[in-house]
Length: 355
Ligand SMILES: Cc1cc2nc3c(=O)[nH]c(=O)nc-3n(C[C@H](O)[C@H](O)[C@H](O)COP(=O)(O)OP(=O)(O)OC[C@H]3O[C@@H](n4cnc5c(N)ncnc54)[C@H](O)[C@@H]3O)c2cc1C
Image (cartoon, rainbow, N blue to C red):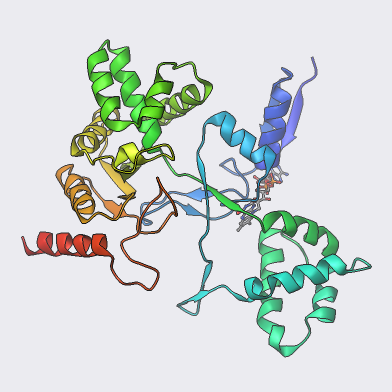
């Protein structure tokens, strides 16, 4: 049988290996670096509170191949609506040159009759002094993201690339999700013959629509989430990690579009999840993203108390509006003023500090 040698273990090499291995060819990947991933490079260094992406981070648009791979692997992702900031001479600056003129740039690129290198295009259509920031920003974008030498790169090709990239943006969720966590605990009880405990747990943690799906653990979506969650827990146990991170939103029953918004917060579930992570992995637990799904002051106080009682090594509250039911609710409104849940948050922290 023919064997195949792939040079380079970046996204392209790994994808080629994945496709070819379906045809049962023996495959070898030769990678020059000590790690796979190429220009996708996540740094999980203790000096940072969150994983840092030194390379690719976003899914630019509704890309069928990428999205289908995520679905196949049961890896969740979310829409990103955030602003881009740049650190320049020690100051954070909102990146706006390209976004302010984006429509004009894209229109000129689209209308271009004859293809030219991007550098010539910018010098012809955006030569004016007012566009100096824009020119620099486009050069950085083309050079950084597309690795394009702008004195050679085709304006038309970049136009095609950027038209895909400028739609919806997604980011892959980090770590284990609320739903996966609940499924693993349910499954664990079941595997140990503790059906009553399993049912009691899911009745408190899952919304009715998801409970229905649990009758059928062969449901491909449930099976995928369970499989992914089990793999993560197995990796957490064996990897040389200082902490186990998880994300959590309360009320946990409302973490879905089909939830009823009047679900209650139950501190018992939060405590059980933290305890499960600690005992199954033998490592300390932290959350770098926990938050609330409604603006109730009681809810935020309850969640903070639960995080405190669980003796988490760190707990970082996520305060941003996700928009809509089953999404995160910020502690502050758009002008920066504290909402009633934000006031409750501040008071809780003050009270802890005074103890
Ligand atoms: C800062 C930055 C941010 C980015 N952000 C995004 C983003 O948000 N979204 C997005 O979609 N894309 C983004 N990209 C682009 C994306 O990372 C790349 O398009 C993609 O990772 C390229 O994959 P690749 O396999 O083609 O090449 P690479 O990732 O470059 O992989 C090539 C691999 O081959 C190895 N190699 C090379 N020569 C040899 C040799 N002779 N022998 C053995 N091994 C060799 C290299 O070490 C490397 O591991 C970003 C890129 C950068 C740099």
